[in-house]
Image 1 (spheres, rainbow, N blue to C red):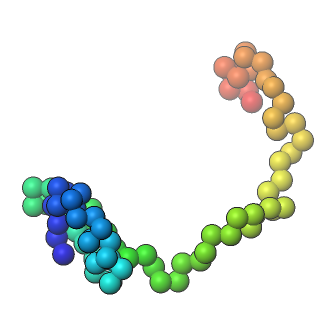
Image 2 (image 1 turned 30 degrees about the vertical axis):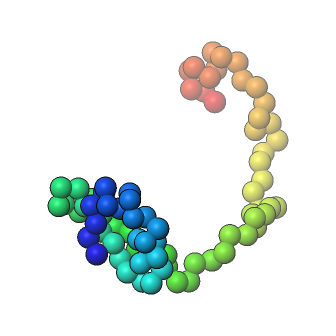
Length: 76
């Protein structure tokens, strides 16, 4: 389905329903395609907060203050 930007702005809820039904939507400006809306991939993983806990380690001193001269010379 091709839809102009103005039409997409005014009909977003119905476009979302069409996406949920599996339809792809092309957004146009002056008749030229500028964007495409598509349903999300079917096998998307759910977001798990805290999943990276314990996997990222910061070296001691990573947040030590540095003086302005050292910062400006790029010798960080």
